[in-house]
Length: 149
Image 1 (tube, rainbow, N blue to C red):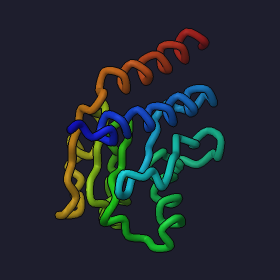
Image 2 (tube, rainbow, N blue to C red):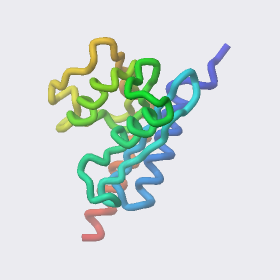
Image 3 (cartoon, rainbow, N blue to C red):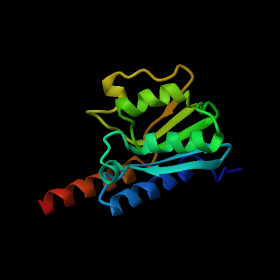
Image 4 (spheres, helix red, strand yellow):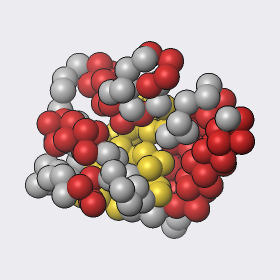
């Protein structure tokens, strides 16, 4: 039997958050945190809105999930994010002890993989889920930004 709540299902929810960021003129990265097939946190980039370089989608999602659970550890949770987390977000994921990270598009220059950032030893990682869709939204955003300037 096919599980309707698979990585693709939840990445589509993260993409909805990315679209919300796009609509707010924020870099379109979205995230959801899932526990036992239930979304417990939704977030998107808010760096422009909040004038805060740390207001990445993942950071917003970690805060919302910890608030929902009433605790700082997310061991039983999965982070779905449309772009490979940066060093800052990967570092924060270490401290949350998140169980799994699923990302869409790779971030070749500033992603945690190319930066060599250490994740929590128990964190599993899956990449490339809806990679094309995630990358296309980012590309569209930056093309439109360049054309406006």
